[in-house]
Image (cartoon, rainbow, N blue to C red; front, top):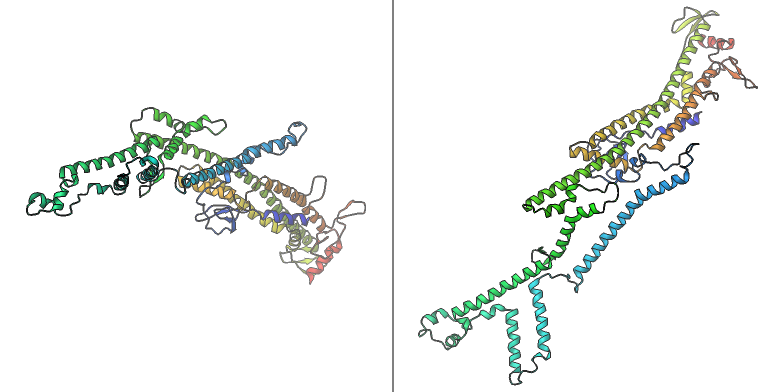
Length: 561
């Protein structure tokens, strides 16, 4: 009897509240959970939602998962097909679809990202430590030209020049190449370093053989210098235009991404590929739909159609994309809310069942205590009636054998019985657990309202609180296993306190029989009022047996002192 009650006390201690409050954690089942769902101790009243939603309601272990299907075999005469083998196969398939598919997808994503990272590393350093793309067009073009010039100069190409002037010609070629590629500005220099304006305006006063000879140089003639400079500028412009066209041809019309120094960081061909994939992503996803929940929004799927429909401006395309994002976000939000509600309704249903069982257990224990108190009161009335002659007050009377008796009633007998069985502590713990469970139900209902709120902050806070509760470590939710255990405890307490039909006598009835002095003979037959009071409080055998003169004499003697 006592063993079952103490076991029950250990079980009901688990009940506690999980009402969210307002700062950095979530109060759940009387425990404060941080953003990672870790139990940090009893609730302090400073609890709130974490900043982000984790994977709680999207995991296979979420409460909502068990509300969809069961992996336990259904027994019974009329269900012979759905046996353990079928249940096991169903469980394996569920595990595959709900867990392994997610694992494989995560592996695929990780492998893809790792490959992308490695490929970018190779392509960005694969040219002797340099990117495989052109970083600085002009400088790299000059390197190509210089390499080609050196190879040609050192080849047999110039070997047939006349030996009389072969070396001077080669020297002139090298100097001209250096001038045109490494210092092109030198080709515009006039060799005369004096005041050329003074020479041309008054040649007699400013006569100089150096100036006279310089007049033969085109760079010292304004007209020819202009033509030379114009040619040089046109060459630079043509080179820039050629580079611009070449790059756009390479990149299908998309500009490169450059750093502050003009170096290419991301080639336009990459940007073009990314843009193409992004714009056509909706159609590809629509084309590959082959399972529930994969259908995408019509605006997302129709981005390509928008491009083909001769849009009026870039702004109109951006507006369309904004609408597509809003539509897809709304669809995603609807999925979040639907998943959250599935979990919340399951949590609420489990908590309500658990609450109802706790309430029944508390009622049984409270009723047992009240019955013992009532029986004790009735016993005191019987004792007073049978030891007092008449005119008894609440504190004294005249005994039937004469003399004044001091009546001293108490709750000592019921207190001893209740304490020995431990039901007083258990009843108090249960009552608190029921109150806590009621708070839990209130919190769950507030989360149900919160996740459906049109206010983003309220909705996200509710989702975050729910996710933290589900991810709590150790787990704090009352699940089907909690309910099953509570039902077993209820049956045990009910049998312990009230007995079983056609079976054992319950604790309350057994205590009443002990007080009344009932006994069992050697043949198992009940002997009513067999024992007189043995003088004890615990168990108090026969203290209420007024049919035994010994009992009455003991009370008369006790109250005569």
